[in-house]
Length: 347
Ligand code: SAH
Image (spheres, protein in one colour):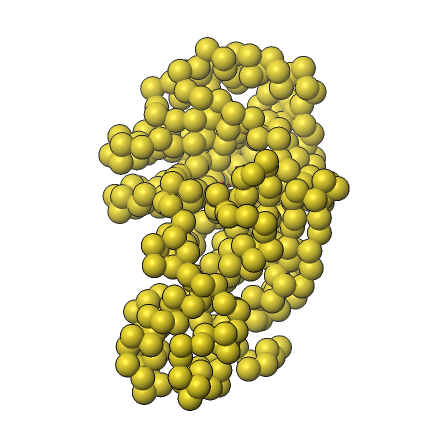
């Protein structure tokens, strides 16, 4: 089936086992044909229906006449100088575009997925925020980024992070369903702890995630050491206050007997002081957590990365922390593929 600018075709990638079973039945086949489709799409990762050789020719034709495999079309790729980070631009059927990133670190491969076109959260330091909110991605549009990037990576994918464009927890249903598809042992089979969902801190949704006891890892973008500071750079803190966020994060770790990751984008003159590190130490010490410090990446917005020596002094205070502290030197900043640098034009 041909893609068209005006018509939206049903895509197979994104459908669950049950949906594929019903799809097969709707074409007059038995439901196990749907499970075969599931295997071809997510386990064997085939791109065309003709490669699905154990399906009868008649059924293959029917499928081709009523659906396409991939909901996304890759329209561009940029490689970092070292070639270890690759950024991909995909187009949705309605013409809107998203970016996804493939990162190689030694033998480890990580895929960073977008969950929305644009973002409503409006963090003042993030490039995606300049787009405003455009739309949620469907389950298929999220999972298809993985399938297409996986094809282009050398070696297995060790981690999937929902840290691209958008706020995952404001597209909760589709994000969880996409994670479930990535995790399904009959399909893509990513371990649940290899899937990380990152949020700017939507309190009610963190509660829901906690109650539903999903096994995926949760990361929270903290980015500030007190409410006053946070509200200036993350206006969402007005309705999602820091003390409540911290308490809901603590409850999540207790109820699910798991660890939470806090991300902290380090910005000059904003949140880089010794006192900030000291406040973090106090705020996070009683929580089963990990702190991931991300030196700010350039976005054309009014912020700068602290001097190396200030980053070092900040980290030295945290050496006393009872929780692990890591630094994420974002990869691919030269091609704007680092954290907070993803942005596309909308149609
Ligand atoms: N909206 C979600 C998912 C995006 S993840 C969230 O906020 O968690 C993107 C990560 O990059 C977040 O931790 C965010 O705080 C961080 N980030 C945003 N802008 C950045 C920048 N300019 N430099 C470094 N990190 C940035």
